[in-house]
Length: 391
Image (cartoon, rainbow, N blue to C red; front, side):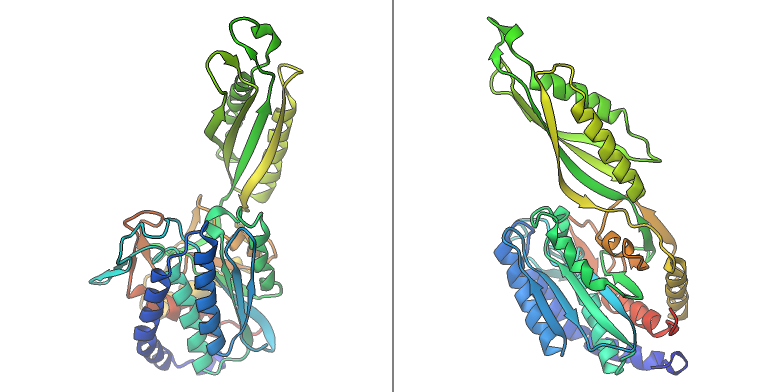
């Protein structure tokens, strides 16, 4: 469809007609509770969506993992121009049953339940975008839907392999991450990265009263390292937070083991590389030669950095919002992490937080604005249709 021939009224009418069916899908997804660590639960949702998307005529592929829920890739037929990626994730935070026997509730224009905001409403937005473009017989660009199964745990359950679902974005002109949207409609164009690093310190055990000199305290060395690590914090480079510590067996024994985790936040991926080097140096620096330490990266969200094309995509989205009668969204730089970074690292511009609007994700009060399902879908559809061929 040529940009000059965009029929906004037709698009909004179709989206409105599809709302009941999409609300039903949204409810079905919420009732298929899918916490990250429950592999069978995530796989049930992946199977449900696989069937749904296949019925839409999309070519689907599930990517299974032994210790994590499957990821899912779905594609329309190939177009003549570089493709568009739509992203979201299927896993949620709370264990099955945490929201009671009726996990999906609607009150006025608000929906409550596990993952209704983060990120099953976003999946519904992405699917509605695809259905609308199919209805318009849009075939310029292939549409690719990329759904992760262990996003909420930074792909730790799949040992980092879960992030490879975003390899399917290769060659795309742009991407829209339908993560939980901001209540005021603003859009995220940049995010800090985050990582969880576990450091294990090994010492020498001894009787703390009779022969303390024969011991080398792992806890003492861990405490020394924690102080050095937290002194590295600089909001312009990286923030370090030692949030969990475990060690020792009894108060009358010199502890031979201690481990602690470091939560990292970093503005750029270069800052992350520098932070890892700094942690490695601290691990090697031990006050007692009988002590040694090792570190392990348990999960990583890379930083979502602007790339060539980010500003152009942002301006196009902002213009579209205004044309639809909404406020021009402000570009937001946030410290929260998302999978959008795995796509920006390929040089592909991404707008993040364009899923349903809501609040209180990761809490028992999680809620989403029901009307934002159609609003957000319309914004994305019209942005895609407004993209010039050379985008």
